[in-house]
Image 1 (cartoon, rainbow, N blue to C red):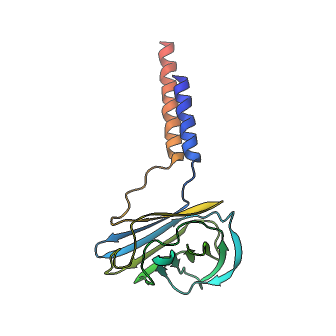
Image 2: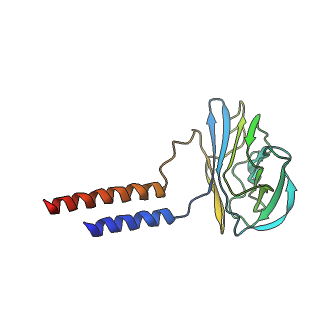
Image 3: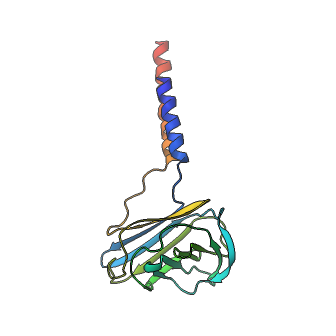
Length: 196
């Protein structure tokens, strides 16, 4: 019994160490609109700082895997190179959202392998949302699927689907905590049974 519990805990630890995307971007239809939500902290280790730059507005260009979130500041960004991933997530050209909000300026350029991050970025979660009113995935030239851009330190995953994402599944660390509690209860029960 103890060996099974130990093996189970080991498996959960391995699952917790499995890499996952630090930033998740969900693109979906909601009613008669298209919504893009992004959330996650990024580890810039492994990227090469190339220059400073500026993001002028929120927009996307699926044909070149470009997505920008302007942010609340002046749009000043640090530009990095070194990401690898798809050079497109559809055939659409320039599209500007009708409403957008972001806590940091953020830009993804899949064609050049570039990432633009607010020059005031502190390493915490980048959170943004864009809404394209009276649009569909097809009208914006978006292709459904999962797209991943990665580098040595992290990755970004974009999910394009017709429906909003489901509620999040508990992360591996939560499962480890739950598994440890169950193992502790099993140990207490075994101990109580051996005393009886």
